[in-house]
Amino acid sequence: MPRSLRKIQSQIKKKRGAASTALVEDSRDARRLRRGVLRQEKLARSETLRQKALLPKVTRYRHFQELAGVEQFSVADILQYIESFISRFDEEIKVLAGERRLGRPRSSQEDRLRNSLEKEVSEFNVGYEIPDLFDPETKKLLSSWKGDAQGLAQMRTMRVTREGKILPVA
Image: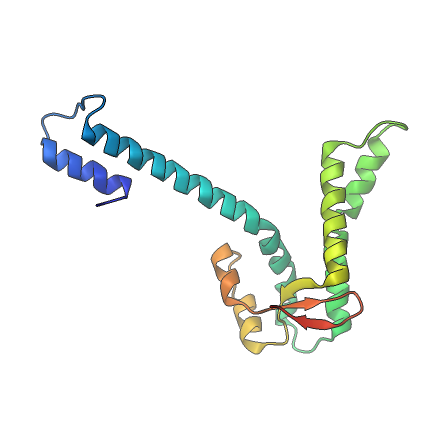
């Protein structure tokens, strides 16, 4: 039984002929068509949610993409890159805090940025997940990566703690 909307539409069109395109409201064909449309919408919603969930990881890997071109680097360089990535919102938080009058609550944008910063700092204390820059295959993939979410699955990852320990990803 076909599940794609295009196949359902073409089967109904073949079955009914090209002359008649109107469907009875609760006919089997109309129900099949409605199920196909609902499935198509559900798939589009889930794809949007998946892309939105992967967006932070994509931005993180994009930041480390320029480090993939460097031949020699140390754990200290990686720590410095992580700290520069975490501090990317500092200026914007300062501007938003400066615009706010004394005694007023923070704006929703400032709250969102502070929560994101807090989450990344706590992750950095436990182990910040980044692409494995010591693996030559991952470095090659990262340097040729176009920035799409599909390329993330091919790269190996590692966790780096604030103290500089490198932990394997389970």
